[in-house]
Length: 108
Image (cartoon, rainbow, N blue to C red; front, side, top):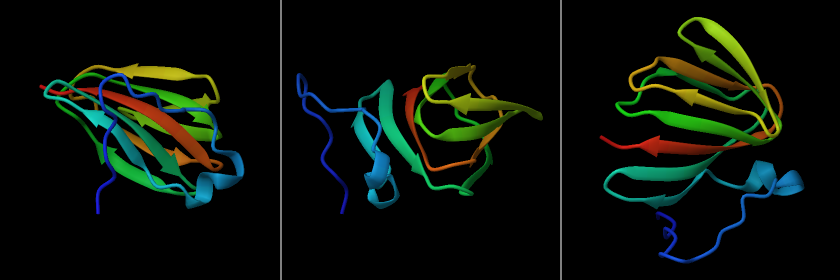
């Protein structure tokens, strides 16, 4: 069962989940024809294999630490850090500690 998306004007919190993180699923806040925003939740050690998306994306670390591999180079993201990736950039993500990320995708 999919979770409902936000309605226009509806407010959602992106504050750190803290103790609730391990029990909180990844959630798409909304998806429109050209834009999707989601909270990606990763427990320590969880790895997302290398992939690329057709449009540009941003990944903001809301809590925890993740290693983002970007075309062979590694970047450490901590709470408050944001990374921008151009269209079609290969990347992977590994959670160093329990983490939640705010991901914004431009859909082409």
